[in-house]
Length: 186
Image (cartoon, rainbow, N blue to C red; front, side, top):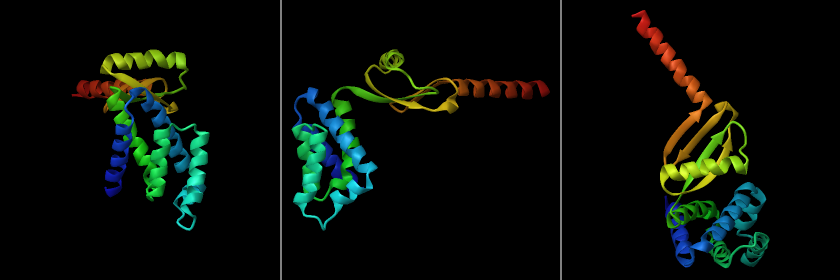
């Protein structure tokens, strides 16, 4: 709980430091990329959190990563500040909370779309547009593949699940058949 409050303060301060909404996404992309690197590499996690290394050495590693990511100054400064204050371990939480703040400022909502096969960009765009029409806000769409849905689409947007999968249709038909069978037996 304590870490979530601290992470929220960083996300809020970062959002407040970026006056131009056009710069929000580039800062968000940097934080998310850095967060993925941090979560995906035990070695990086260990180095950045190692108190036996001088802060300058750890900052050097972080700055090399930020340079490789072509980080905007605001994201760069926020990550360096978290490292200096011994808070780099909350970076993934800060990135998530910052994403929420960016979406709010940009009147955007995240949607997760699951299909049985990967969608091309040409197939995904009309789906994203349809979700925008449905929800009345800009949609940042994440795509997932799950062969278990057989076909169709399952979309989760703003806490609402829209299940247009073949699997769900088969389950509904199966339930109706069972209900019809129960009724005819009585």
